[in-house]
Structures are given as structure tokens and as C-alpha cells.
Length: 282
Image (tube, rainbow, N blue to C red; front, top):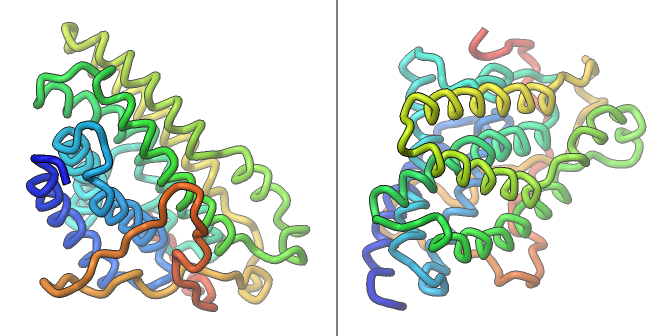
């Protein structure tokens, strides 16, 4: 592992511990839990493969700053405050029984990639004295990892053919969203925000507009299905956390190399969405 990779992995260790703690404290069908378990898998994959990046210290710094924005949203909600607009749909609808688990997963990815990621890249460049172009190669290397996870999530959470016929609006929305497109859009936002770094007021206005726009897309991804019969939306869901609560002995859960099989990457449990009818945060 190149010099600096070990220290970087230690920084990511703290993120992994926090994600595990969040996963351990949430019921499996909670919408935030669905995204959190998927994000934990990605973070552990980055940690495992850190030495394979061109600039491991920068990737580690980016990973920590990136995760920090999601964790700040979690902390805000726990403290009774409103999270950023991009995260509000997920936290507000996390217990809605009419929202499918796959919708939760993609809405979380949408908020984190299209809003949090460009801001984290800019912050990383400022802290380390890098230009965005110096991080671009490693940025795109992570695309393969995310694509593997997105594919696994879609395969394991997608409802069966009988249900799909009744959920055509949902399948259209989720089929139109992809992690690759989202990350390309995020890189465009990086270039815009970096170009505005000498104009703080304009940069803040741009970030605020981005936050709101990503939130609107997230709300569209989470549009309730309108099916009140729980049996009608019973689908494979991401089950228990990929790993248990943090312990010093807990092994990292890595990801296969790009192109390797991803079957079984995310555990599956037969479960139904919460049926208490509540919509958290409302």
C-alpha cells in the first residue's frame, strides 16, 4: 500500500464505525437504513482498495469529508433540526409504507452524489492544495465501485414482474436515474463551484440552488406508490446490516474488483415496509 494509505484508511475507519452504529440502531425497513447499509458497503470498499488509487491521501480525505455531510444530516434530524433540502425527502418519508425500498436507496444516492459530493471535492481541493483535475482520475475510478453496488441494489430490491405491472410510474422514475449520470453531473457542479471560489456570495448561492434542485428530484424519486395493501408491495429488501455494531475485531467487508460478480453483495431478507402509516418528520 503506498505511503499515506494506512493513515487514510484509519480516517475512513471512523466513518465505517459511525455507519455501522447507525445501521445497528435502525429497523431494516427504515428508509435511511436502506441507504445507510448500501453506503457502508461502498465506504468499506473504498477503504479496502485505497492503495489502488493514484492519490490515496486525497481519496481518503475526500471519503471522510463526503461522508461527513451525510452524517451531519443524520445528526441534524436526531437533534430535531431540519437537514439540508437535498436530504429532507428521505428523512421525511423514511417510514412511509407506500414508498418502496429501492426508492429509498436511490433517493439517498441522489442526495449524496449530486449535492454532497461536489461540495466535498471542492473542500478536499482547498484543504490539500489540489486542483480538481488532479482528483479527476481517482474520482472516475470510484464510478466502477458505485456502479457495482447500484446494480446489486437494483437486482435485490426490484419487485417481481407481477408487482411491476402495478408500479409502472415508479419503474419509470427509477429506471431514468443512474449513478453514472449523477456523478457526471456532480463533476460539472465541481467545476462550477471551483470556478466561483473567489466569489463567496455567488458560490453560496450556487450551492443553495443545487441543494434545492437535488431535493426536488429526491422527492420525485420518493413519490408514494398509492398501494395501501402491504401484501401488494412485499419485495426483497436489504435485510440486516452487512456488518454488526462496530467492534475492533469486526472485519472489513470489501467489494469485488470492477467486473467481478456482485451476487450476494447485499444481504436479502423477506420483509414488508413499516405499516404504522406514519411519515417521519411530518
